Amino acid sequence: MLGDWQTHSQFQELLLNELAARWPIDQQRIVHFASVLEAAWLTNLDPAKPVLAQCYSLTGRPSNQAPAVLRSLLLMTFMDETSIPAWHHRLCGEPILAVACGFRPDDVAPVSTHHYMRNLVWPLRESPVLKSSPTKPKTPAKKEEKMPTKHPDIVDKLLKEATKGRRLDHRPERFLQQLMASVVVKPSAKMGLLGNTQALSLAIDGAPLETGASPRGNKVCTCQLVPGEHCGCKRSFEDAAANWGWDNHHKQHFYGHTLYHVTAADSPFDLAIYVRLAQASRHDSVTGLVSLVEAVDLYPQWTFRKLLADSAHDNGSTYEYCYDHQIAPYIDENKRRQNQPLLPVPAGFSADGVPICPSGELMVSNGFCPGRKRHKYRCPHPDSCATRCSSSSYGRVVYTYPKGSLRQPPVPRNSDAWKRAYKRRTTVERSLKRSLVDRHLEACRVRRKHNWYWCAVLAAMAQHLDAWIASRRHEGFGLLDWLTSAVLPATA
Image 1 (cartoon, rainbow, N blue to C red):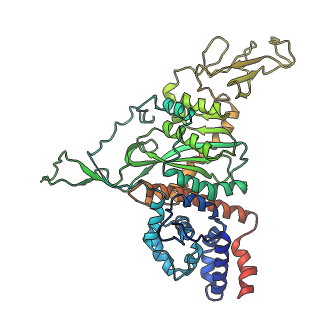
Image 2 (tube, helix red, strand yellow):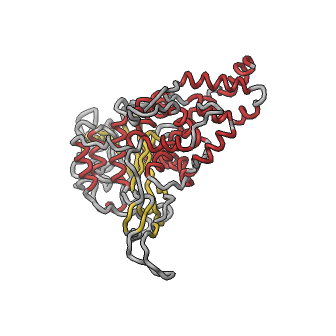
Image 3 (tube, rainbow, N blue to C red):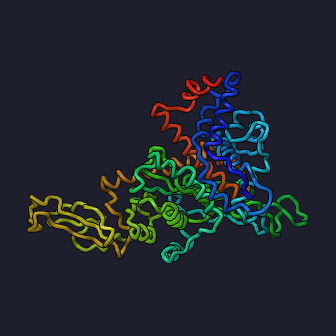
């Protein structure tokens, strides 16, 4: 059961008292761990209490170190450590790090308690499964293309279920998503690090995440085999959720999962607001729609205006969901569908679906009407049109309705407005890179989906801590300056 909760004010008081006591002899060590201390000082875990309380039982021995253990896992990722035993060894040898987590130097939570925290929010027991060795899927016919969708109608079915109100709220991933939202995402929004929360732009994308488990499994049968011989018996696979997928960037197959991020595209720090882990074989169009629906539900008090995505998300269901929720979709065109017209092409329309004025010039986009789901175009020269296309001083207006093909974007793909908006899609690529490379997520080499999910969420949360520290230092304020100039010398 959840016992006494160390509030953020109590933690700050403990941290300040411990640093003041160690200041005369450990000044260099305190300065060395300045970033970690500032990250711990800023991280308020009080909003995490109602989320974690749902996972604890109402009986049993009370857990009085829950916030300290959670802060310890977060700071472990912040310091680019991927092993809990190695991190515990550092805490026992570095009293300043132990105090930064909320422990007393002589009462550091053991390794088992850290693992218990990971298993706590994931009640589904994961164990190795027996199955036949999976085979690699076929390579795309054209290596510059992505893998095709196995089930073309699955996205439409998911949209229908989402429209009916079906959600995956009872899946264990939801606890970690709520934890991330309450601890770091909403505080970042209050600091103004995500942009205008009443007109947010979202960027979505996925990246391969190889698992540490073997794709060949472990032999459990008693067949006597000679070198080079293989039996058809089932094998034990450590990571039951992992399978084969296609890495379009490196043009090769990988065995593991797909890490999926939804980021605030207007954020100068490329911050993720939603993290999901999907099967490696699952197409991004499927994961993208599910992630978009869950991200919108996770932040009901925010308003989303734009969606930036690559060509893997170019499908009618994603456009339909965006139009229903007044989100302007900026999605790159899928080259496989370039022969399918975006709109019916009568006389008077360009190949991109832009109406042509009787004078022969392309009409100017004047926005998208979300209520009627139509695009508005105006004459490029309403006051001096050569053909006088309209007797109104407002000029000729043409509406196009994307009902026949919802893949028509809110503005033409070759326009400057499109390019200005779509170039912010790279924020999600930088966010994924910071998790996979900078936070050494690829080096974790864990073998269970819940461990991978914990590592992925903690890596995304660590990005928010980096943004908080960078923002404060840009404003000329740092915790270390305040401590070394006023607080610690005065208490020495």
